Amino acid sequence: MNILVPTLILGVIGAGVGTLLSLAHKVFYVETSELQKRIREALPGTNCGACGYPGCDGLAEAIYRGDAPVNSCPVGGESTAREIASILGLEAPSLQETKLVLFCSGTRDKAIRKFDYMGIEDCNIRSILWGGDISCPYGCLGGGTCVKSCPFSALSMGEDGLPKIDYLKCKTCGICVQVCPRHLFALVPKNTKVIVACNARELSGRDTRKVCSAGCIKCGMCARVCPVGAIKMENNWPVIDQEKCIACGACVEKCPVHVMHLVV
Image (tube, rainbow, N blue to C red):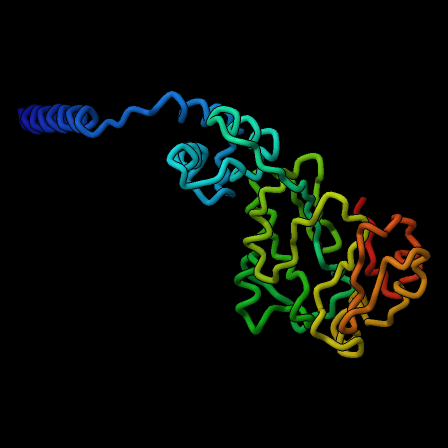
């Protein structure tokens, strides 16, 4: 008897709450339009949040309301943008295809350490602790925050301490670009052939040598050996004209610190 009464009371309360929730659903229910449903079906359904909205449902609603452009989904790319534009009777925008690159060559054996870090593997936490455990203020911290954030498992930490990109899995959503505290990832045009895989623009060549043996020392060798004049030194930094670049690899071969990388 002592157990029966509380059980009945809980049952009545549960039934009452269920009834109220059912009524609330009917009162506040907003019917989704057919166009919004079609937009949602056109989206990839990854719910990664790279668009800035709470999943594909949120983006579909924003596009339908006119609060977001049809090309807001970086994962779906141009094909998804065209399909949504067709659904809404709009002209599809021209999109520039991109690919992900990492602007750092400071592997574990080349980036000089200030101290041995033993703690939570997170780049943001590592950067807070005395500015990070590596001497270069612009280099990869190796905490794997980018790897954990990738919704497509396109990133992994290599044995050398740098993240590796699986281009077959990468959807160029840009989440890793956003979460990296050192801003080492970037989405570059698809036609990019060679990059300077270093982010230490503000350091002199001598200071770069003090913190990393794989950092750009601003020697200008890449510009001198380029057979088509695709590389110019601007403000003591190599700038590559990707339209002129023929991906011959001359700069990659002659760079004394091996910081020029082919990304074709």
